[in-house]
Length: 382
Image (tube, rainbow, N blue to C red; front, top):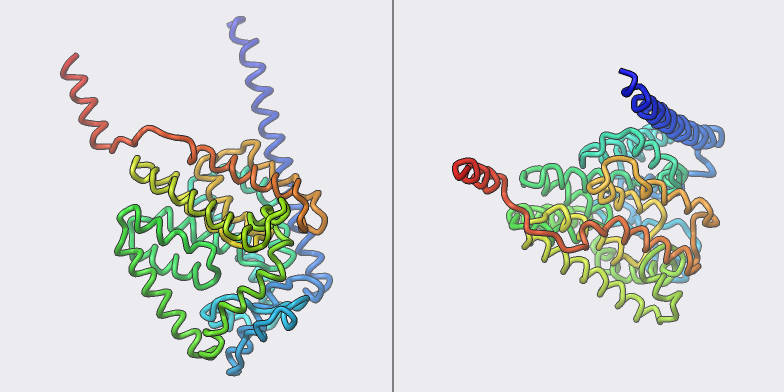
């Protein structure tokens, strides 16, 4: 009895410290979220929620038969809050235009917060310290400030992983994500390389149908101008955010060469993902294809990190140092690196650290049935 007491005391102290740390994270996350929402409520959302206002205006335009897109030139778009998402997104956002703004922004922020928590839990992170740590990050704070739908994309990615063997779920979920933003488009390739070709075909069909309907309503002329719209947007904003393209430009490459580097890096991630599939490691492949969308995009903002959080949680479902690393980006002025190479490199180091378990070679996975047969053979031999 006397020998057990010295051992029990450190364990008790460790439990107390763990509880105190968890309580501190939860209280801090709740306090920060409350402050952000209070500031929005105090200003009636007039000085915040830029993205949400863009979505709402696009929905209003579609309801009134007006194209939600600006003139696709650099001069017409520079310095203006413009709608640059696929046309089906404008149809979805028409719901936001019907409700009063005072109701819309409250429901939107609640939905985005719930979507982020649900995304983490769907991929196996039931540790509340992880969710609390994430709500303390500038990525989540930016979501509440501008009203982005990055947590919704994270939820779509989590649903795709959780129900990956159900084409009836994966196809509409991934099609919805692609219609909102093209960041999850590489996951269609993941469906193909993992043998889920029916789900991939259904996703492509659903996306094509939604785009046909969306651009028929928004205006077919805007469909032909959409590539130019994205090109002009990239020319304006690709140097500002956290993208691989911005990092390559900061290293001295021309914009064209920088975009080529981003394409090669994304292709390399997909190539390694294909190798992991051949080794039987679908989780690693999923994370690699998921993050390749962020690497490929010429424009990456802080709140896009919500997508990478799904990959974080798949390998680190409990609180670790990686979940606290995004807190460092609070030091970035206005959360925009604007070509600062140090911040751009730190961003990519963080992504590499998150993907390291998926990047390093692993032994081929043995199916569950094979493991059971091996155990039976060993027991008989014994």
